[in-house]
Image 1 (cartoon, rainbow, N blue to C red):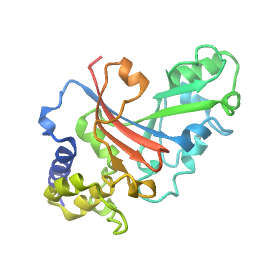
Image 2 (cartoon, one colour):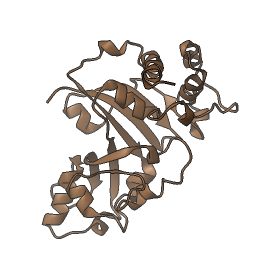
Image 3 (cartoon, helix red, strand yellow):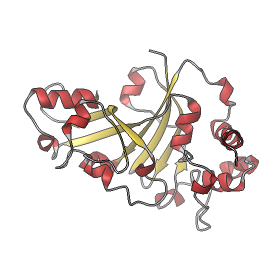
Length: 244
């Protein structure tokens, strides 16, 4: 399928999820995509993390050299971190620690520079409670943010088939019948499961019913799409951030 045709199919699907044409979204806003995962947060500062990647604000992708907890996801099946590039510098960290200047939500570059300036290592945070809102690298448009949030960066051959043991949230089952491409329709259905099915597969789409992250709210961000995964162990959020 030609890329233009495929992007038109994706746009149709995204507009159904967003309940609005893409053309109605502010072109001057930045649409950020963040993902929180309990395991990645808990183990991010384990031994082997390259602190220079954090300090330098590196954008890392598979095989995630220097970030062991992300490297461990490369062998995962569909709908995993391996399909994303993570902007470590703009990812937000909330760390329960007595180390000065790290007690509030801070970007990764700030965390890395504080540790370096104080002669500390990542192991000094290994036992601390960490909440990491990972900023997934996109081009800043609502289309690209939604493409990453729905794992549709590839072509039709990269779509996930529908699991017949799963149940789609009824209202989204009805709405997604309008998606013309059958493979894309089934892929998006897997991201609109009811809360029970989403405990072990796909995701539960909550649209704008998510508080957003602390740093986003301070920046005047507005949630435009959100998903919950597992039994509360992960969530994804697309946020419109005002032009800085």
